[in-house]
Image (cartoon, rainbow, N blue to C red; front, side):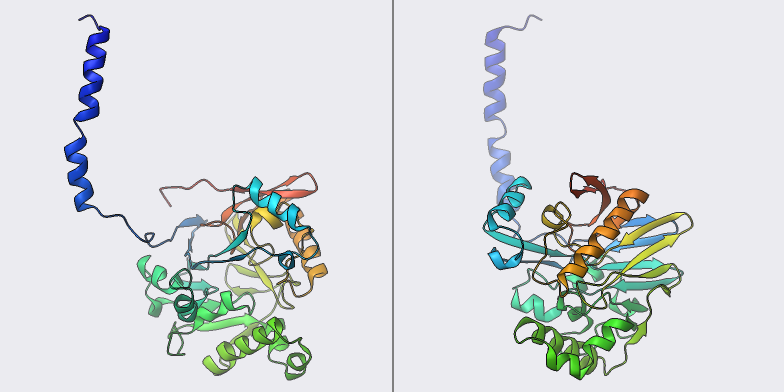
Length: 329
């Protein structure tokens, strides 16, 4: 059959008109969604199953004080290069649930029910997303905390102030515990944000857990296969981890860097929430040189979900290469 211009036009007209009624019908029975599906992912480290569980995000207006040692125009340019808004900053939170040795280990806990209420559901989603992933809160054996900022500890408690993971032992960095539970250190902390961090840490860990947290040391396995690494600066006892099974491993960097578009590309930029900014920068460069040299995978708490990738050297900084999403575990 010879295909003529008349046939093409007639066919195009048919294609244009045919779907109209079905489309209207489908739209009538499928209203637009107003929220995302529960956000969780899974990947393997040897025989270990790692479950990044999204807690949500927080957004605030971008100001010069966010990175005091960088020009605001340079920060905006870095955001623009990453196709992000230049007038605001969105921080993301991804705790982990790790299945290993017949146990479930949660690593950091997100903003908690208080965060969920205050943000109208934008964050504080960890507990509900954990359940949606197939892990009941009662099934968690151990909770490991990297440091005492609210986005990492607040999810330890329910809205009623009781332990969210009723059967779990809570493990905390010994250096972090000693610092934040020291009355002298608290008295010397500046008014404002640091006093708030101290009071919140005590609300959650001292009052909420009745001081039942168990301290752990750097350079030792917190649980078999999870090695605690000294990465101070962000807080005095800030801790990262190497999770390993056989020859496979991943570096869980906690808050060595925040959003990669800014702080991976520009490791010398010092965010206002780094307690000892010079030490945090030195830690950042040491860790990222190691990750680039060893080509070790890295899991970032504040990276775009699910937070897994590799680090490569690029110019005077580094670049995050996100891991390809896999439909199989």
